Length: 378
Image 1 (cartoon, one colour):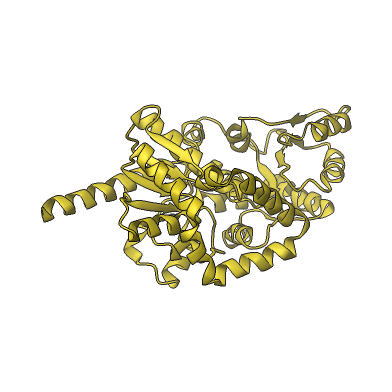
Image 2 (image 1 turned 30 degrees about the vertical axis):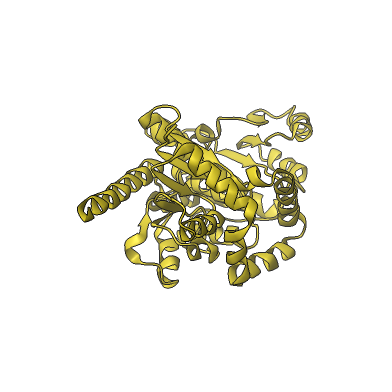
C-alpha cells in the first residue's frame, strides 16, 4: 500500500512518540485512515536490545542523572556515533523493508538517529523519498538533530530555530511550526478554558507524575493541605500509586486521582497550572493548551532546554522540592491570580495548537516543489 507519510520514531523519550502520533492522526483525519504509518525501526530491528536500552534510559534519567548528562554530552560531541548510526546492518535492513513495504511519498522523523540510516541508504544508491525532521526538543539541541541532514527541519519555536542557524543549517530549510500536538487541542481550544480566578472560583492544579515517582506521596500530602485549590493527580499506569493517593485524598473535597487516561488534552485546557517534569511532549502540549507549567524535574540535556524556554518567556517556574512547589503556587494565585495571569500571557506567544497541520502543509509543499523540479528537468 502506498502511504503518504512514513513517520519514524523511537522509544527514548515520550516526545518522539507523541509527536509522531499527532502527525499520523492529523494526516489520517485529512486523507483517510491509513494515510500515514508510524514505525520504530530500532524496535523492529533489535526488539530485545531496544527494550533493554529503553529500561536503561529510564533508569539513568531518574536515578543517575549525572551519568545521563555525561552520555548526552558525548553524543553531542562524538564523531563516531553518527557513523555508527548510519551503518548498523540491522537498522539499515529494517529501514529498507519499511520503505519497500509502504512506498511513502515522504519520510518524517521525530528522532534524529534515523536520518543517518536514510542518508547511508541513499549514498548506496537506494531509493529514499524526501525526508524531513520534526525537532521535539527546545534550545538544548543535540548536534544529532542536524548532522544527519534533512530536506527541512520543523522546529517548535524561534528560540530553537536560532540554535540551528548558529550551527550552520541553511535558513531556507528551517521552518518554525510549533510542536505537533493532537488535533483535539485545536478543536477544544476555543470552547473550554479554566474558570476565571474571581467570583469564588478555586484554582485548578493538574499534577502529572511520570516515571520518576520518588517523593510523589510527600508532595501530594503537602498539596492536599491547601484547601483552597482543586487538585487533579494523573499517575499513569502505576495502579499502586493511584490507590495510595486516592486513600490520602479520601477526606478532601475537590480532588481527582486518575490512572492512565486519554483526557490529558482536556485536563490541560481546563486547569490553571500543570505540575510536571519538563518532558518534550508535556511541555509542548501545555503550551498548546495555554496552561502555565511548574517544572518539578529536569532530565539533564534535552529537558534543560524545555525549562529554559519557559524561563525565557516568563511561563511558570522551577520547583523541585514540595515546599518550593507549594510556595510557587501560593504566589501565583495571590492577589486574585496576578502571577498566574502573567504566566498565562507569556504562553500566548508560544501557543501553536495547529502545528501538526502546518507541518503537513509544508511537507506537501516541499515534496510538490521537488516533483516540479524533477518534471522540469525531464
